[in-house]
Image (cartoon, rainbow, N blue to C red; front, side):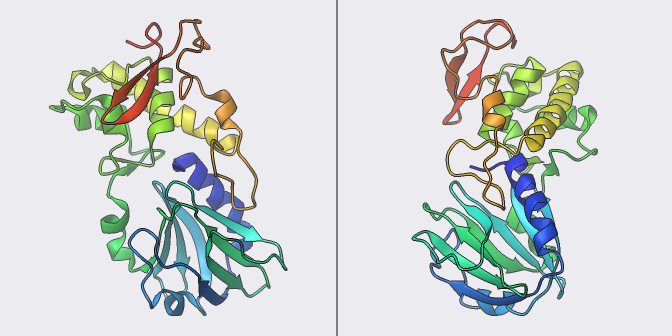
Length: 270
């Protein structure tokens, strides 16, 4: 599933092409996405000018000229790409958005786990969660330390809880905890202030590094112009069970935490 670096990369790649453009038409070829597209979706979007593109956690947000938000979540296999003029729709192209410069924005999603809606900004928290943006300067070591107090859940599960921290999923939670030297199974409430400081620093470093490299293209993900990322070539532990740790050569281990595959180095992480 695309996480913060992938969504941020899509936003950055599309923003120069979409900001200021007007939507000339919307073709909904499949309504059965997560939450289903309402019948009024195409009407709500058609004729609107896109003022700017932003991101909240794993959600892409397009602010429209009527102040409402076009909210997009890519789900597990979703792609939002600017298509060349003349390209016909393909099998999994579910929403086609025509622009006033003649180009077309296409939402494609084989598994249909994505979400798309036009909402009032007041409803953003309800739709996308109220967790702190993982790259926000307000996510400080002291704030994370406060979030962990009294929590018996593993620290990896807490990092992935969108109600607390928005934007992190399985890939980057694993990579962040490796860089911080913290095992994913450690009880969140047992972390010390120094541990939280390392986790916050690792969060900023890993996410910034991933964004610079266009995100992780493991399965379907590409940016808004159809380009694959290459941060997957830099993964330290994710999906590397049995491979030597890039830091100490100890074999990377795999375990399950709240039903998700988790990876760690038994020597570098304590």
